[in-house]
Image (cartoon, rainbow, N blue to C red; front, side, top):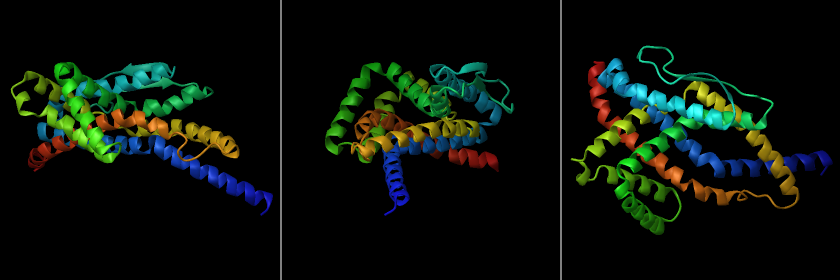
Length: 276
C-alpha cells in the first residue's frame, strides 16, 4: 500500500468515526428537533385555518412569535453576537415579517461562528423549555409525583427510545388527568403550550444559520479525531458518556411532539371545514 493510499484509508477511518460520534452526540436530538419544527408549522397552519388568521394571531400568534424571537436573542447574547435590531412581534397578522432579530457576528471568532448553530435551533429548545417551565410553575406541588413515575419507568425500560416515549406519554397523562379538568391551571398551561408550541418551527434563515454554525464543529471534531485516532484513543463511543445528559431534553421534546400531534388531531376537522 502506498503512502497516499494509507493516508486516504486513515482519513476515511477518521471520517467514519467522526460521523458515528456526530450521530451519537446530536443525531437523535436533531431528528426530534426537525420533527417538532415540522409539526409546529402544521399546528400554526391548521390553527390559522380553523380560527382565522387574525383571530389566531391576536389570541396566540403574537405570544409564540415573541418567545421564538427571545430565544434567538438570548442565544445571540450568550455567543456574544452584536444585536443590530430586535422586533419581538407585530400586531399585524398579515405582516411579511412577524418578528426578527438582526445580529452582526464576528466571523473571525470561532466561538461566535459556532454560535450560529445554537442561535438557529434556539426557538425549538427554548420554546420546549418554556412549555416545561410553565408546567413546573403551575403544577409545582405535583411535579415530584410525575418524576417518580418517570423514574420507575427508567428502572423498567432503561435508557432508550421506549423510555423516552413512555416518559413523554406519562407527562401527557399527567397533564390531562381527570383531577385537572376543573383546574384553571390546566387551561392556562394549554394556552401557553399552544401559543408557544405553534411558533417554535425553524424558518429557512434559522435552518441556514444552524447549518453554517455546524460546519466548524464538524471540522474541529474531525481534526480532534485525526490526532486521537493516531494515539489509539478515539472511537465511535468516545463521547457516549455525554448522551446520558440528553435524556431530559429528549423527554421534553417527545412530550411537546405528542402534544402537537394531539392538537393537530383536534384541529384537522375544523380546519378542513373552514377551508371549504
